[in-house]
Image (cartoon, rainbow, N blue to C red):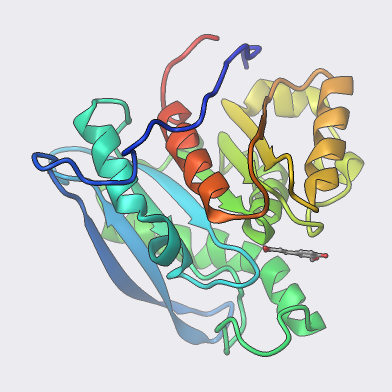
Length: 265
Ligand code: FER
């Protein structure tokens, strides 16, 4: 993996508003049977404008936070608008975006005490749901590529911690990994990246970002410090804002443009 010297500015004005002529992708709610959880579960899927069987698409798995479910990104971030605009500007590699429910338990709604032990455990159990239920479902029902270099995993806060834990723990499955404002569910650095050289050789992109006003920033800080100390190349993006949607929308805007690209920085 290359070293990064990227300068990322906040997304330009209008990035989350439709221009009149922009071709539109589609968002669907899809159900899959999860043996891991023992229920039929929902996820939301973005397919880009012109989605066609004549191509094989990359897949970004995009995870929500502790207060959300599979609808959270679509409710708060208009990902379809951000991504359609980027397609129109020819800034994205072809990809579908899968937004699953990261709370792998029968009642997966964000209700009651979100910090209950069983609910936090469900965010850990999601690893099996993702690897053994969701990915196979997507790969047999969508026109997608099925290699690690064509799979990305990213998420916000609790979903950022999941993306780092699951992604870095399964480098044979994912080559592009992003943690946005990652929460304290993130494994301690020595457990997260026990073999820095292996991670370095396998990763195409490792992204860590956090708002400078975020109370959870210490989590990203300590991950970044360890990666730097062990020479694991990664994008480290400290941005304006707190633990909030403008930050995560800005992250999606930038991260989505970097993944599945052949770039040398
Ligand atoms: C915590 C504080 C915040 C924590 C998780 C969160 C597991 C998650 C926040 C979010 O997803 O927005 O101590 O511990």
